[in-house]
Length: 269
DNA sequence: AACGTGTCCAACCGCCGTGTT
DNA sequence: TAACACGGCGGTTGGACACGT
Image 1 (cartoon, rainbow, N blue to C red):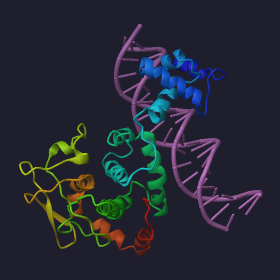
Image 2: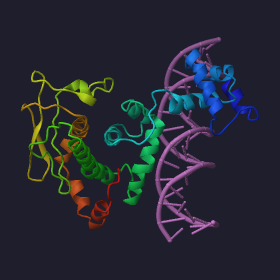
Image 3: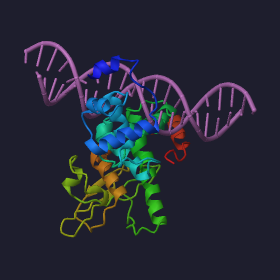
Image 4: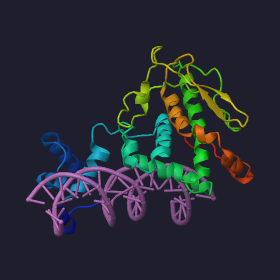
């Protein structure tokens, strides 16, 4: 039926949805539920494809969809998860409640790829990934921390820096050694995980000779907040690579690239 | 005020995997 | 097993709007 409807150009409506169409769709789903989109479109009397109805519902009309600016925490999470999974927008969206894959994809294209273009490098290149990890993500973390401190949000402040990149000093990592936090199928804990003395194992750090970080566990415990966890995700993914970070040293020695990076101000604002 | 340019985002397109007949 | 319909996904487009000149 889908192909029949799609091929019948005269009958099908395209373009922006009207308020009336939205009302019909929402009302129909409220009474009959979602799914079976082609049947839904036909029975609801909408001159739209099932696909179009599905997209409209999932990306815009669904009650739990959040619109508006992507928060700093969400930006950070997008960067972290994208570095893990690449352009798997739907999977990334699962970890940002209320955000759609379309919205995240748009964000990435407009805000992130733009800066790859500015740097004249590929978004998947090592150089750009290093830029994200060593400069922009730390900057985001700092801003999140600063905003929380400013809001008097009772944040445990770091006792010592974890990582010094030569450009930006990263905030400390206070992490829980809880494997469930990294389970793709279990994202319910990480946004506000709390470490108890019984289950805590907190990473501390010290700098080695090339400015990277070594990790040890079993120190005091801290309350884990969201930005720390974001940081942890990246850290666990990359700290081994950081110990062998000859490549980043190489491109940081390129003054043009370095100056370009430093001239980008508050790109995430 | 008019125009050009850049940004944002809703919507569409095409492909692919899965389920059904 | 093949053919088809459907849903899901990532890539792309185009229009509205903002901003600068």
